[in-house]
Image (tube, rainbow, N blue to C red; front, side, top):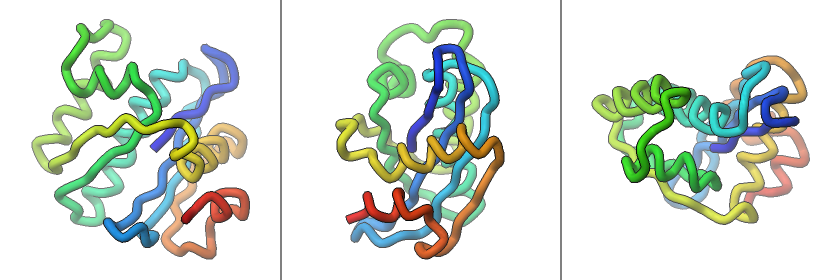
Amino acid sequence: MDGSASGNPGLVGGGGICRRDDGSFIFAFSRDYRVGTNNRAELRVIYDGLLQCLDRVMTKVEVETESKVVAELLSGKPSTPYLWWPWVRQIANLGLRVSFQIWLIQREGNGPADGMAREGSKSQRDVDLNHLGELPPHVRACLP
């Protein structure tokens, strides 16, 4: 999952790709979050992605993010700024229904999610994709 911000604050969106352990495609999504900050977009997209997983009855999820700040917030390491507390709390509440781990990954490994996040901030609409062929070509090209 990834958030995208054009300015900070600025137009923000988020998106993600869900894959099985073997790397095969399950679903993708992008969201328009209008105006906000990059960290808010990162938190919001993780929340939305976990909801998508719950809707599909997935109970064990590994979340990959390139945001060190957000990974630390959700791992309980630093104190959470008040501004982000509502999203951190909502994600923690989802953790009661779906078991998830947060993994910090390098930016280079987050290409498909980054592509979906940019789609969310550019298109200004929410999109859910259930077939690999529905992915935008630039996102499909990033998949292994």
